[in-house]
Amino acid sequence: MPTTATTGRPTATVLRDQERQVLSAVGCGLRDDEIAAALAIPEDAVAGHLARILVKLRLRDRAAAIVHAFDCGLVVPGRGPRTQTAGRLPRTAAARAPGPKVRISVLGPLRAWQDGRPLDLGHLRQQAVLAALCGGWTRSQQELLDGVWGVEPPGANVVPVYIYRLRKTLRIGDSPDSVIAYEPRGYRLVSGAVDVDMARMEKLVTDIGTADRAGELTEAVRLCSQALGLFGRDLLAGLPGPFAELERERLTERRLTIVQRKLEWQLRLGQRSEAIAELFALSAAYPLNEPVAAMLMRALYSSGRQADALIVFDRARRRLAEDLGVSPSRMLLRTRHRILRGDEAGLGLTGTTR
Image (cartoon, rainbow, N blue to C red):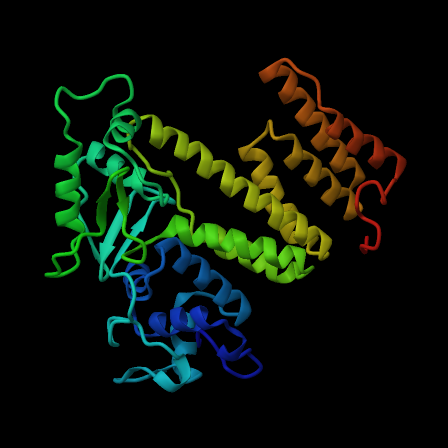
């Protein structure tokens, strides 16, 4: 039985540029980690692209995607990707694109690559020093000592030693230039020399705000999904010190905010089934988050599931009482009251289809 059939199936033209590149690389037999290295994107983003490809092209699995890549001409047997269709080639088969040669990921365990090759960043304290520089800030030696060691500083000032080792690790080829610069106020990453996923995420957040202000909700949802695709599990896993701890909390909240904005816009666009599924998962992960509970209640009510919406309220009320010893906020109580009254305007559901 064939894995895929081309008759009546959408072609690769429905895919976005990077999705086409991923499909082309899958057709060439590359693994997710190889595709991530070739396209300079996180491995989690590759998995996300592949999942969307399977949905858009109505394909069953990865094997079907490989066959489809050949069937639609993205890959030519024996010749790798077809450049005139796929656009940019995977970097394993094409000339290196200009731009930063070193990539650093902080939206997950701290990792770095040079031209797709993973780099050894040393022990955890040394990694924590690098992570402290990845937000675009200039850090003095004292700030690094306080942020990485906290109230238990080392016996000697090891920061210059760690910076020296990191400079050697992150050096681009035989270039004498370092990607870590020193200036009177302290150390910083050289702008344009390093591609940090957090900077890309923040740029996407800016673009999300622009799309929202322009009323382009579909584009805002797409950009949110793209930003969320940069996040991995276990933010800055294992890194010690106050800075890493605060950054884990900040990035967790950043991700949650993006998720909530995306779901809110999906509800406005009438994409209720997708939003409800994600809201249930989010509510389970953050049972004390009242805005998430309220959004899930509104989503369920808008789908004609008033009883389920009230069950969500009761569950949230119990958890708040048991875990925090508090009552629901006015916001959550108001949401329940409006659901009982059928106040669709107050719930922000006016004009949507039930």
